[in-house]
Length: 308
Image (cartoon, rainbow, N blue to C red; front, side, top):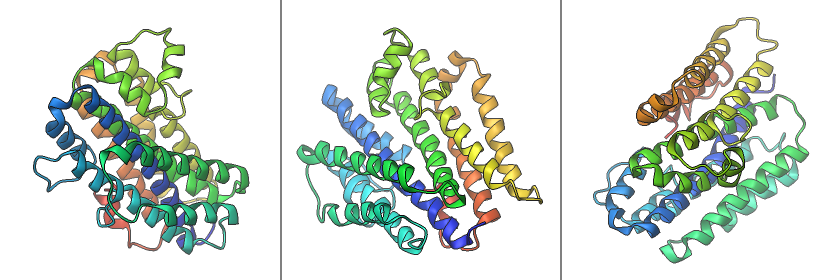
């Protein structure tokens, strides 16, 4: 087992980079929906901020969303803050991170916008943010040894991906109706894959089933939960206590069974509740992993509030 401080840093690097990408996806989905219907700007913006557990803003606009979720240095949920936190953790784990991976993180941080920008520039920035996360993932997969450090990095990414996909899926509910699902599918990068899988048939149940249950699609909730459980199983090979790591795997297994055997029509009717359950479990698993493997507690407050 690697040092706890290194393990913790690797775990949070994975979470922060994934969070930056998925926040960009959420913002792009939201902005795309508002282009189609600008009459709901304030309510839709408030719903998105609520999904991201950001409060304290009355009657938010496009500009408020971009400030809070894209470039605000003081907002922990922003893309800027995610990359800054990933860089801080990468510095602490510099001894085990490949040079190419460190340069990717460091370069991204240096290229982040130093000030605000308007809606007209938003799409370009969000595409860039997604590309930088994709570059990070590609470098990590091609240069990292599959040791415990890799497992912690992957575990963090998988938990964050499941959490954030649940928020994207929930955004279809708060935005209203089956007409929102094509934008949500595009936000997850799964629109073309969905059309091939379901032969072009568009309805809310099939779209929800694809994003929640289809483990073949790498951004689905089920894929993230399965991959997280696999990482925990590999990390717990030498763990004779069974303790919190086993509890974490049990919670993931219970959630997978709950989703897999649910009636899809009922699940769609209770989408907010079910996606909230996904977020609760990922937060609980994060807390158990923290208590089991990490000595430091400086980020523990984030865990107990759903990593927000």
